[in-house]
Length: 532
Image (cartoon, rainbow, N blue to C red):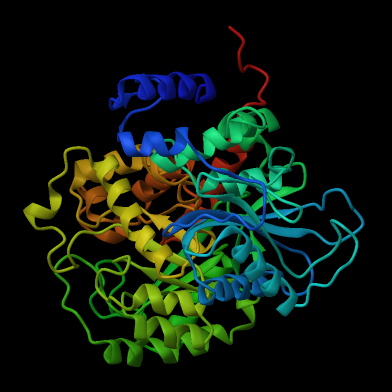
């Protein structure tokens, strides 16, 4: 946990004032040098006590809390974000999405809560006016304080400024007592202390302890999944908690050249039969792919991919066994993604994270479906080239490169609460690197958390099924003989924090993840823990 910042900041301010030197914080508290201009900005923040006084400057970074418990809550969120964008607020980061029990007035529906971080040229009271107009336009009326509302938009922070007027208080006066505000607020930050985090800590410490210290005092991560607070992903008109149990994604390749099952499911009937089998064996998600992404695979056009995909997708979607199940489309083309979602797909699974189609992120943002962002260098034809296999630290570099792609997706309008991350086992990695990834999933999460807690909390998918590295380790040249090794890889991944496993053989892997989930549920509560 971070040490309280206020005493350190006071000493730094005095040091700067006397010597005007660039200061480095102690290595156990901060890891980066802070430019003099940035340090000065947080030491001498401005306070406004009159609504006629405003900040005359360029863009200011803001954090806005979002809540809803009336009507279609998720639609309300999407509409509010869209209206903010149209009103001059560029959103750069999103917290996770939380479903929470109501506070203060408890006899009302459960809330969805999150927070967003962005930049705007609007002055504080102009920003307040814009947000109140959005609330009114979306149907909010004057009612019971803390009562039901279609949308609730609160300014938590505005740059490094404080505002105290009859109609506006910044920082928001009740942040520290509300876990449903603190959780998404902390999501917008990371463990690496940047200039903006320092500004927030400085502002927050004037009212209570530091931001991170206050969150830990409330209970921190231990509050999630209990006390009426769940971290959820919106999908197929439901809110899914991927941390409650591991999900099985069954693979269906309608291709002639996939490495494991190429050519087996080209007809619609054979594809439907395989889906029926996977669902009967416990698949939660069916992942349909019509383009091979094996090493050195030739690339189809989007039109050719659609010709293969759509007949099977439509047939699978209409299967009665698909009730309550999810349908994913495995594609790196935005055109295919859009058409598949229009035909009933619930998720987009992109092996390139938008690198092979510059329109992918913006298109998925408009589709408002979860997006699986996978790590890969190059494309399937080049990903195993020697230059794409060069890593100094594969887990740290995968985390950094994957976060960069996710950040681009967020800027395009895909919120963090619709992101699923995949480290890309078998894609631009050799055998040793794939093993390192499997063993290093907690490292990948922690490295992403340095930049952004929300993305580090995203559901994590792994896909080791029948891949070549398993054959190399176990001397199994035939892909169909690698199911036992797949089970071992899946077990390792789930115990390391994977939430979704993508597999060919659903039956045996279902048993493996059930056992892993049971062990994880017992972790921390078994009688022999702590005894010697």
